[in-house]
Figure 1: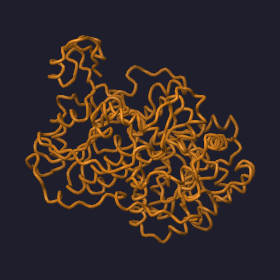
Figure 2: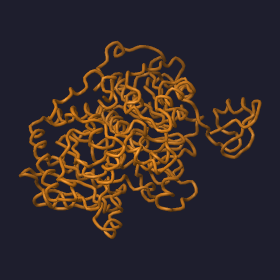
Figure 3: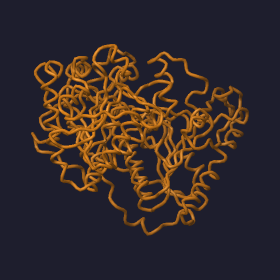
Figure 4: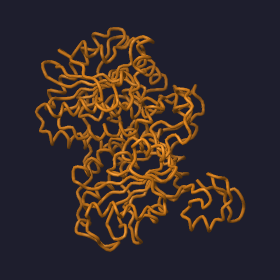
Amino acid sequence: MVTATATGAWTRCAGCAAPVYGRRLARALQVCPECGHHGRLGAHDRLGLLLDDGWRELPSPPGADDPLRFTDLRPYRERLREARDATGLPEAIVCAAGAVDGRPVVAGAMDFRFLGGSMGCGVGRRIERAARRALADRVPLILVSASGGARMQEGALALMQMARTSQALAELDEAGILTISLVTDPTYGGVAASFAALADVVLAEPGARMGFAGPRVIEQTIGHRLPEGFQTAEFLLERGLIDAIVPRAELRETVGRLLDAARGPRRPAGTRDHHEEARPPEPGAHDRTRPAEPGAPGAGGGFAQEGDEDAWRAVRLARDPGRPTTLDHIEAVVDGFQELRGDRAAGDCPAIVGGVGSLAGRPLVVVGVQKGRDLRERMARAFGMPSPAGYRKAGRLMRLAAKLRIPVLTLVDTPGAHPGREAEEHGQAFAIAENLRLMSGLPVPVVSVITGEGGSGGALALAVADTVLALENAVYSVISPEGCASILWRDPAAAPRAAGALRLGVRGLLAQRVIDEVIPEPPGGAHADPQAASLAVRDAVAAHLDRLAGLDPAALVAERRRRFSSFGGPAEGEMP
């Protein structure tokens, strides 16, 4: 970015440190005339640069602030208020209807000034609304990303926005409507691994950085020194992950050529068409899933928020090395299992296992994350952290299930996707995003079970399901409690407090309806009697597969999408 470092109209370029006169910089669209460094732009400036005059901001959908009533060193509501006062924006994205040289479009631009461009429920709802406006008007959708990732203070509900935005783009794919992503600096985490990676065309500004795990996380986690220019637009283009690098001054012309390929009719900017008066309701906007009766699958009644000690105990139990692994569960409950390996592109990921078999007499495809039992196996299985090849293998097996018209069972136990250099080089964010989109439209029943840890987007990439179950001592979170504590409390020792605030145990997840049902564990936990835990998983999965078996494929997909559109919805969806 270009930052002011002296009085008057002079600024200093963050790329080359050269002093630049402010008016000259403005004429250059915040691009340094000395080195070409592209400084950050606010959301309104982005839209003004891209769209013809007369564009109209889309109304902000209603929603609930602070769904977890989150407090770290400061209340989240206070942070939101400061961000709104500083930027003049209600959220970290602005969406609009307009045109590019007379070609009608819907566009959304993120603003990094608003809590680092983080994606919470409000951002997810706005992107979904923009996609539905593009669908109703049958015009292309353009999304400009600038984000540090999903918003920690909204916990698992923020994580669900990855699925929500991915399925919104899937619906545009199915309707034959062009989508364009412009990656700006920086674009990381849940945004990189969802809508930013899923457009038909992915463009990037020079030097823009994009990845699932940031360089600091990679260096701290695996101790690798990263090459010069790691995760930049130039790095991504060389590895075939994006379509083109477009300097800011050439953006409108480039986008115009892409819009011409979509063959949309031209019209003057600001004109109204017949779709504008009557638009279909957004899924989840007025028709949230009716609360289940107490005791029924999905019921959250009777579950209060965990205290810090309860949540931290669940984290320790979820990570217990004696818990049954995915292969243990498969051996106990899947008959005639035949493992299938390889992603048919680059390799085979040992952290993902999958294949075909039957459960309670019903043929199915099963895919899961294998952590391993002892240290030697855990190292061989990358500690249950899948690589891009793993997610692509999982996607290949799910497509096989769709072809054979048999259900999918996923077993999730992972601290998250692999945060390594090679994973980023092979498109970790893109692989995760592809699975989110794929699962949102699978025409067969999908049941997911969180058996231990459900870590961030790496877990969600296997859990966009009709029914999500969790073992009693499982956890599911947008970030690890240690990571959250380090960032927000600035103290890793605050992890137990972070675990409670994130509501990552089953009580909080039930109340948020992120999971539908808790599978009881044997006394003392699943590690105390692994066979009994696996049989409980079998019985729960069989019951839900029986329930889903008679549904029409179109109804399955529609209901699954309604599920993920409901997360972070209107005020009635707030936590009790």
